[in-house]
Length: 248
Length: 383
Image (tube, rainbow over all chains, first blue to last red; front, side, top):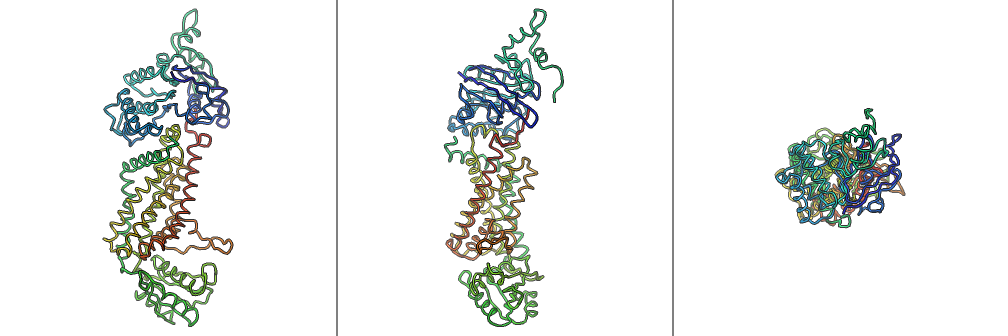
């Protein structure tokens, strides 16, 4: 079972801008939680704080109740898939997966096994020896995801992992992420409300760095419906909560 | 992982070597450019004789200064032979004509009488001026005492068109090795900046990578590339007429040791550059802040006499005291050109090692603070 993730009163400012404002959130063990919000809502900063890439001004991040700030080893049980493509252009797919797994401490044999399994699961098996720069955009995104998961993390943090994928690839990745549930805890962000509705056990909607709602998609649809009827979809709920004003 | 340092070093070294090898233009240019420079140098200056013996005219107003200096110069030896063939003269004008006609490599005017113990005439664009000056300094030091700390015993060099040339290539070769290694700062900076710009360094941070492992891996990769570079240069030298070193084993050992030392220095400069910028274009320019002094002000490429910057406790510090490439060039000159044993070069190697270690710690620490620390590292995404 994946671990529980608890954010306690996280605040992060960039000068005058408050990116995350006293954010509290709990992700249950083995759950798939979608973190939704408009551009600039603080999603990526929140993820950066969870992964240790951004230092919060205040607050704590707990994994199974243990503060991540005090445990580098615990932090390495997190797998992070960044929003932008972060791959080594001139390394082969398997080559970079093996490198990452080994950097996390895996033996060469384990790293190879894990790398090959991921490539197969994400439809990149035939591209094992191909350098990343020679892959299509969609393949690079799948490789981006594989790099986050190659060391077998207990918590997968996926920042818009499905952005830019065609429907076939999106379906593959969606099924794969869903398949992670239980054994791992998954926190993901997306701007695709349909995807969030399909994948997530619960969704957290944030704006201005604050948590606005946290519940299952069906519960939110029921809560924000009108005239005794459920809301038509999650996007309706999202816009009702965050408004229609353009951001950034 | 962080506890298994050797594995981390091997991983990073292997990654950086593969990335370098796949940037064929950079790798080929880096590995081959000192060898190409050797060809250019030998074409320009000629390969010169197999001996560095210098034809020096000592212009003396009479004893004691000129005689003592001439005697000290005569006793300098090189590869078991006289380093300088000294001709006495009292006529500066005739000596200068001999210099211009190529009958002498250098004129040392010991009768200058303007506070300098000797005034040296040679072509500063050639290596001879600096080489002659170093011999004159050493001779003056042995004849009169510690010449370096007494302004009375200054020497100076003046440009004399058409002079010099005979042995320039031999003098320049040690500097070619050092220049090549120093340029490793550029390749290190480019690799490190690319990791930052493409954010692959984030993945390393998440995996708990530490700066020591990364820096040591870069150092190891740089040392391998440096060795290839030295091998290419070594291979081309005989074709350019460079005589085989008197003690080849000592020369090879000196190259191996100095490759490690200078690679550490280049890695440090590359990491310091990468700590301060995050685009390749800026890195190339910024890196010159390190490469130019290390290659050019140290005397590695153009032999220079380094002016005193300040004095502490009677010791005069010059720029070369802070540039490990200066003693590295000196050590290679001893082992490669002068045929001295490794033992003779050891003090210079030790000085280069100590200096490079200080630079390496500084460069790695700056990179770690700026690029691997969540609290100090600039944020890329601010959503």
